[in-house]
Image (cartoon, rainbow, N blue to C red; front, side):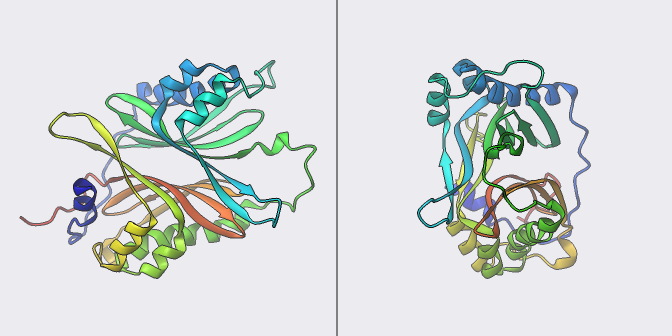
Length: 289
């Protein structure tokens, strides 16, 4: 907890700039793709060894579920043990033939974090990865059924991703600009109450990397306490919407202090950030000693 609070309470004075990241190596790209394919193809194969090789034990996997009783949408969360046992029980059909292929798209790799999308005939999953002690591991997933597999489902209104991007962008900016401006109401508007925000932290005593968690309450109260104040002209915010699917979206937000990968879900007509994987910007200004 002390490590997390220290990160939240870093002084945010000074302008800062985006780090000039070296492009990811082909080795990194290949390792990330291998982890994504182990996860999805391994699940269809019923191959638990592939899941154990690619997925972090503290995986947070989420989806939007509609309650049949009242039609309200809620966030459903699963972890590593549920995934592993479902795979062990061979709950998914095997992949067969050329049409049953798994496709992976890598959107970004930056400072030991990565964001991508993996699609099988049944599922479309947004994936966040982190390099944990030299191994790329799947950390967070937001998924929904592959629309191509929903041929027998009830018809739904036509989905227009461009129409949704304004609300997605606003939620992402409420999260980051809310923090920088000390506006707790904006922060609360942008994040889901069950937000899972994770950062890999390497312990100096052991040199090993662990995951630190924070949730919406800590984030909102840290914002209310004005721990992150930074003048608007010093924030250097750059937002990229990687992909939008019905009910889910994948976004990157870079700024003076932080690199954030966001997974957003649309629940009951409102876009909310549900998962964040982040690190400090390596060129972020440090407080004077």
